[in-house]
Image 1 (spheres, one colour):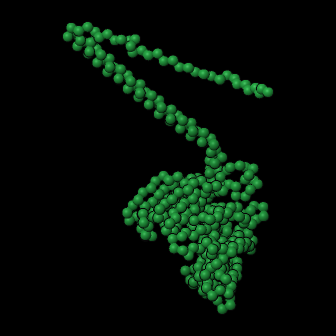
Image 2: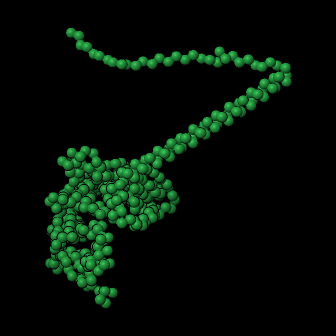
Image 3: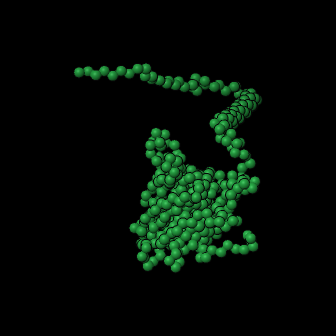
Length: 395
């Protein structure tokens, strides 16, 4: 127990530790790093506003506080390197009797800047989902309006998807793409960033999956002039009864599963590539859960990784040459096999012809005459070649 006593926070509702980047971890191991950081929030009570606090541990120093009003719920979303903290604040109407959230604020704390400044993004709609791009400065959100909340049984709710990125010039977060009238309610980023899957989970009639690339190169001029021009849908799919979706650690494949724990009508799993092409589907009775094997950290240093990326084209050329050589080797083996089979066939035919001659001689029969002319056929092939063509207009 730290200092042999607990940290007393009256009415605390939730807390989250700040993740530590590799650079911060090395610095702490050398005794030069900053303290660990956690965020927590307390609700409104006795005319006191709700409050989000950021605390340093072990010193227990409050680094930053933010007062909030009309709060129904707060959820913490740390960026994977600890550069940003997004607090999703679900708000209810000021004088409403019900505390049901009808709007949302995103309070984004910049953890690498002095005094931890906060940028606020306000939405009139409810935001059920938020997800940071791993090791990046982009995030995606799902928006749901009250008008789109279906009260009819069996009718699916429609959502909107927004993508945001950090503007390097102004320094604030800006929207780069808006997707309207989507059934997807779940966001899953690739562990390597760039790619994201949008899935419809929990619906009784829709089981759609969309695969998006946020850095797809189309037209460099258009990309420079238009925000979000790179955001492209690579493919779509469907998994009946889907209950879970998860990327593999390499970011090359993604698995969707339907678990009997969630009473899925067709338990099993599917594996897709990052472009949305289905590679495997298996239905399994009493299927419960699908988990990818964790990928160990790379043994290469940052300098070695940079060198590999720099020389990637040379490696690609080398691999292409090896693939071509392997293909030619396979073709040569097939050609040699065909020649061997033709030789065996000709030898077998010659032996049988010789046996036939011997048998005819034993029986006093003359050698069979072969009508060579009757076996010949004349084939004519006409080839037309257009050398030049001229059009003249006559009056």
